[in-house]
Image (cartoon, rainbow, N blue to C red; front, side, top):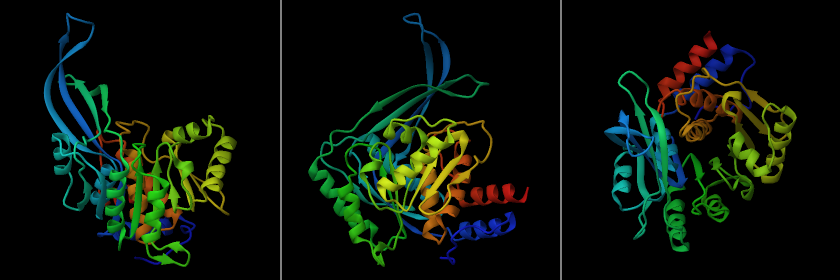
Length: 350
């Protein structure tokens, strides 16, 4: 771990040096990833003709790809950046679950995957079509939810999670709303982490799609703007005051160390107690190829950065670069530390 910094230096050169050293330290941090595993299934086909049965396209099947989604995608991103992810969650013994398990690189430790009898893996199937000379576009998405999560399943996952967080440098909690992740589970993880004073020594990062306001006292939460609008019943858009009230309100109600609101083409806004709001402009272009899983990339990058000594501000800056890169890729994508380093260097040296 490199020496900690409260905030970046005043100029681009100082910032470049600092961010470069942080990325160079992305060598095998141990990150526990606890939460909802989802299989992202992509079915590819070419447009053949229009059906005579209904005004719909007939696609000629090409191939099927299964990639990790949800907590699995966060773990996959940790591994791609150079870390070791200890993944904990529910997975089915079904065919899609087996294909999902095989899709992980070896840097994703799967000892914490729980396979309850009769459980089937939640799956998001995206059907993409295109011609020979055209980009494939998503035609439809089919969601197959898993069965209700029982108390026994939660207990098994909690037991595996307590083992996984031991000795970890950071913890990611990925709550996609299946009912597996609860404030009680997160509180149990906090109790089993080593302490630095009254706080856990390892940072805990939360990505909760629907229940952020139920959690308390973690290192950082990273909702996107639409999730903020839904949880507070407001519209942010271009209203800077509405954004400020929302971010400060969430920070106060949850007692988080920080709240990072990702805003798509508007960039990010970082809220920390006692510090001015930091507005981070979007990295890259507005020619987005696919936003699937971008939030998982953001939180994985922040976890990696915080685990090697970054300030929250520095971690957010790196996450902004990572998010800007991954949305220019198709599917549930990841990026490497080398790609991240190149983006930082190109941006700050230009």
